[in-house]
Amino acid sequence: MSDFSDVGAFHAHFGLATDGPPTESDRTTRDARLRFILAEVRELAEAYGYVLTYTLAPPAPNHAIDLACVARELVDVAYVVLGTARFHRLPWARIFRSVHRANMRKVR
Image (cartoon, rainbow, N blue to C red; front, side, top):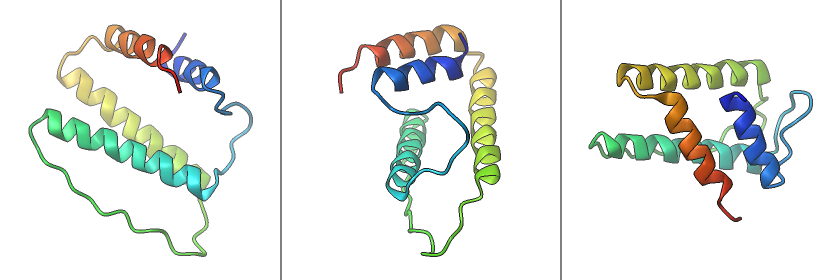
């Protein structure tokens, strides 16, 4: 399996619908996912010894979601994360499997 498939298995484990054609998510889900990503970045900053603070202002009420742009930016984030792991010469596959196993044991 790939990392992406493993995350899909995790989502299925918790009943999160993530299969099917590309689609926009509702505002509540978008907010939650973005805050989740930012929380992980904050934890990474703390692991490096930094303190990260940020302010997340809501989008304009009539802001249209550009799903193609969202897709590109998510891949860019993943690319930078994987590149950072490579700079540290981390055994990504082994670490990912360990984190995946721990996540699959979680109870919601």
